[in-house]
Length: 374
Ligand SMILES: *Cc1c(COP(=O)(O)O)cnc(C)c1O
Image (cartoon, rainbow, N blue to C red):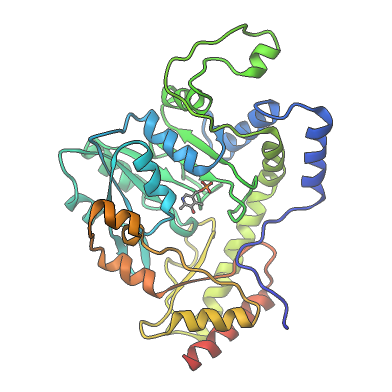
């Protein structure tokens, strides 16, 4: 059996173990100084004034929509080529998701043309998703949102630490789930342009309460009021301690991911020119996913089986949300030809900071043999 190559490996070590042990020794487990420090570090990373740490990106997206006052009767434009969480949060807010196709097979971002065609008098927001860590055309989407009086939300789960991400949307949510570019096991972060919206998100994260337990513990406040409907979407100190270790190395990991993605591109270009690699070489990216498109007639499941037999994990990003039973039953059939075509041919190859160039060559070599057989 050859060495196993996993799709996404978190980088965890002594630093994280020690950070967790320190929290346990100190005994303050949640909503403390570490959460605040992680928020400050993340805000600095994205060049903004403030950030709110949350229990997941899903919770964060829900808060973005709620704080932007998107609710029942409203329609939200969003990709179907995304993780189901993006669409679920629109339902949590009580709004209706309106699925929009992608631009092209080699540019799987939300299509502005299709979004424009799907505008109605009820459209209140648009969620863009930075697929694979490649930022969408943010100035373009900002202008689109402004022209049509919409709120712009960024699902930035794939793109922590990337240039302008999180600065153009009215609000943006990032994920620190175990397989993302930096992890707190479960966790996420929210940014918002308007400080009032960010403050609302901060209150909504903890039941709409006007003061936190640490403020009361330190004698800054004795009681609290509840001024809005909130949730328990808090991050704890253990997770924040992990995040503080991870965020220090995020830049270096993202650079390594970009380098490996470039190497994949070159090796695939030579060995398998029939395989399409979306996006462009040298484009700004957090290189979260190594997504490729197999030839239309390739038997993808057999290819994935052969990769697995060689110890190589692969995946599909994503089965279109509009085709899931729940969404079909609730909203009826939707036709998104490019999303469906992309999703049928897409294969995600291993990409993480600890991968080696030799492993990239082994993945591509195995893929080449599997495609010849299929
Ligand atoms: C991972 C992911 C999410 C959800 O993140 P959680 O932190 O697990 O809630 C949302 N959107 C996209 C595109 C993701 O990849």
